[in-house]
Length: 210
Ligand code: GRF
Image 1 (cartoon, rainbow, N blue to C red):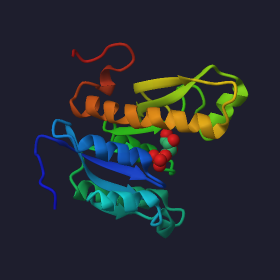
Image 2 (tube, protein in one colour; image 1 turned 60 degrees about the horizontal axis):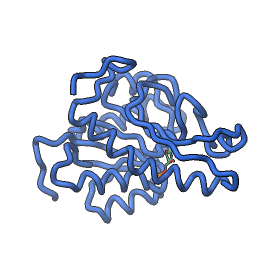
Image 3 (tube, rainbow, N blue to C red; image 1 turned 90 degrees about the horizontal axis):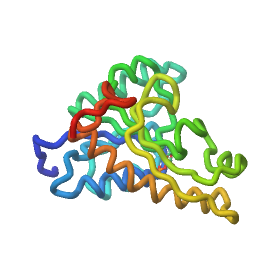
């Protein structure tokens, strides 16, 4: 097992799919001076490709399969929460985690629960953000890392970046450029949170002194 550094925040990344943002966080956290370690990757789908990537990187993995809980969302979240507690997790990063979380879970992890969304929030909440950005004809499109609030794709913004939309962009080309941004801003945002420099209680104007 990898040596643990007590000074580093213990982070769990929650995924449902390919896990490219998870991989970017693992890569960033491998730097000696990074203030967080990726201690656990959890998937709600046993077949998520990200689990393979995490194992290859030597990161502990867990599966909390929502299907085994049928429609009992509360039981699923209690199992998820128990897994996080068992691994002494400080901060949770959602990275393509395709389950809506209830107010119980969100409140429990308030200020320690981050998400990445592939749009410039508050624009284009929800799915198919790249297609909708092209349809809307916006000139700039991007990605946002934010603290999770009970309402979907909302909550204090930690980091955002954008790319110019090109006339010949397709959903795929735009998604690829935004994904590059995502891989850059998620590690930056996690660094801020892990260093205690981004406090949701002060979000919305006042920031903690730097
Ligand atoms: C990313 O676009 C992320 O913004 C969104 O879901 C996608 C996950 O991709 N929430 P990956 O699994 O990190 O590659």
